[in-house]
Image (cartoon, rainbow, N blue to C red; front, side, top):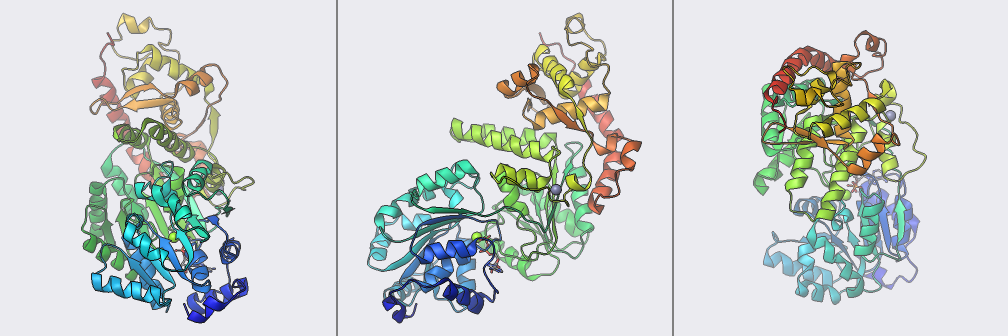
Amino acid sequence: MPADSLSTAAPPSLAEARATLERVWGHAGFRGLQAEVVAEVLAGRDVMAVLPTGGGKSVCYQIPAMLRPGLGLVVSPLIALMTDQVEALKQQGVAAARLDSGVSLDDRSEIWRAARAGELDLLYVSPEGLAQPHLIDRLHDLPLSLIAIDEAHCVSQWGHDFRPDYRSLGRLAELFPGVPRIAVTATADARTREDIVRSLRLGEARIVVDSFARPNLQLAAVRKENASRAKTDAAVIDLVRQRRGKSGVVYCGSRDGCERVAHALRDAGTNAIAYHAGMEARDRDRRLERFLAEDGAVMVATIAFGMGVDKADVRFVIHADPPGSLEAYWQEIGRAGRDGDPAEGITLYGPSDIAWTLRRLEGSPMAGEVKAVQVRKARQLFAMLDGAVCRPQAVRRYFGETGAEPCGVCDICQDPPALFDATVQAQKALAAVQRLGERFGRGRVVDHLLGKTKDAQPWETALSTWGVGADTALHTWRDVIDHLMFEGLLVEDPNEGKPLVMLGDPEAVRAVYRGERAIEVRRQPARAGASRERTRTGRNAALESMDADVRARFETLRAWRRDRAAEQRVPPY
Ligand code: ADP
Ligand code: MG
Ligand code: ZN
């Protein structure tokens, strides 16, 4: 920061901010609500900005920090994030530095010297760093232009990236009165937003929420027809192969899966790079560098990868396993197409995924209340994936955006799924699960509904639900039961590898019983037979090949389900 600006009385203007954006970053102008946010900070007011991933949140605090007198303090959750941003800023000639555990003592003294001399515009720190009293003391001696809290959703347990150290950032309000604070995030449903405002004491802040529309993204969700890893891997490899030469990200739910899929992709001739938290930091950095530098590189990663990764030309994001919530979904697919050119987001999901997600949440040490919210969020995600509402429209509504129009390019818009009213079937299925004492798997529940359980015992044939579903086809029953799982009306209890179907959220179950809640189920393409041939034309190529694959393995699946059901023929008493 040139010392003369300290004497400038009037706040810097938006025109100056625009000039800086052009001069330093080469961008022609602000986009979206950036200008509004920047104007607010330039005027010295608190602001919370909810802008989409890739929306350019960084410049919203970087530019005011450069133009306002004093040092801009940036709190950032990850060392990797800090390093990237600081290195990029330095290359652009911006006076920026970071203080983290990796910075040597000598470098530290140099940073403080520069800060005291007014030569530094931006200082990045971690929330843990800020917990150290001596750091706060030193900052007290300096004029601060602003305090920015990046990835502010980390403060909230309702968000999907909770960092306990973010919790204490609220005290910055008292420690540095009069210093404008700006919190930015891409992710905030109403509840998370409230939590951020409360925790960070941003009660007086202007809240700027941009549209979550990402019109260049073409989204699709593809149903996995069974829990077979090999099948899912094969599907992913096909999808990537059809996008040969393009840069992309494949998200996997586990480190093992990540290594396995990366390996298989390399065997298939793709430049695939595995990335997860089980790798050493230096190794991870190298992999990230390769991904950024090499053409057509595909990052196969767990969620350890991504926050703040700035690669503009990612052409696709494929979820080999679905994320945990709609926020996480939007953030992850949002890593595609940051340059504004067309990009795809394809999410594979199946009944075993929701079972796995719920099991993982069940086993986690979170507080009960938090867990309940996470469970609900997972269900909302799966309800969207298995739903029939335009993908972006569904997500934007979830984020509280009213008036979001159908996108016109997602799988739902291009090929609206045939729905049928399955309320009566749902009632029958829920009743059957209850009568059977919640101690059988889905195959057996279907057999019971059809009245087809081989060697059924008198106790079973005496139940009022025995055979009540004989008028409905076997494959329809499977669709209905899967959908009830996605909606959280049924849950699968793992029971050591033999999942048992149980009733889900009691209130929702009652609403269906009473006929207060209608259930609509998608006819699955592979099972609808000839009628779907007529509606295929608009589908994208990726889904075409998925469908063929699904059809081919349908018979195997049938046999597998039969076997599994047979194993479960045990009377309940
Ligand atoms: P996020 O909101 O996800 O933190 P970043 O701040 O990392 O986004 O910015 C994403 C990319 O968008 C960066 O490459 C940045 O330079 C670019 N960008 C930011 N503002 C603009 C703008 N007004 N016009 C064009 N590109 C921009
Ligand atoms: Mg960012
Ligand atoms: Zn759509």
